Length: 241
Image (cartoon, rainbow, N blue to C red):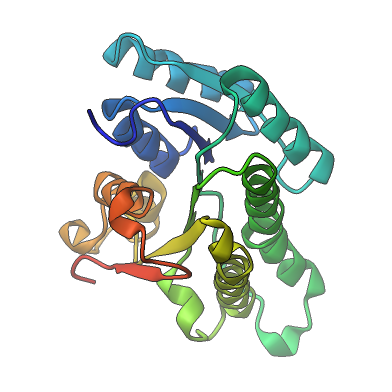
């Protein structure tokens, strides 16, 4: 039996390109899925498609605003009410926008990136960790970060700083809960092969990018017993770019 079988896996961004790939990877392994995103219609579509491909799949679609503490609390409560407890959280939510330049002093652009890349992680991973602590779950939390958070890039100050902050949140949480048997780690992709990225960079060599399916397998690895000695790791998943 696969070690993911019967475990409840909460996936944020569950209707996105990466979220769908992660859900499919865990569905193949017999996990129970909680899919979270803003759109109930897209979540339901993903859930029904996965259930058709994997008969017997247990799943719950629950829309949530991950920037709102009350909404995140309701999400965790709904998952626990349906499946008893959450053993794995995979946080895929995040995004990119160019600008502003630092000299522009555009606080609105800065706040937008932090609201997308930091606040949802802080709230969702924190609430999931608290749930695991309260229920004495030896759980796994896997966060999708970005290689861009390792170094500043001209014209991308808000994005790169938000991704750096997200990595620090992941690392801090890992140290806070590791003695309770909870593993918090991250994946650090380069460019993910998505329709949006292909549209933005039509002349790139897409074969060098990281596919959502390959990134999902790295996430499954960090959610498995193979990662039992890993705490606060940022696993580089760069492919050839």
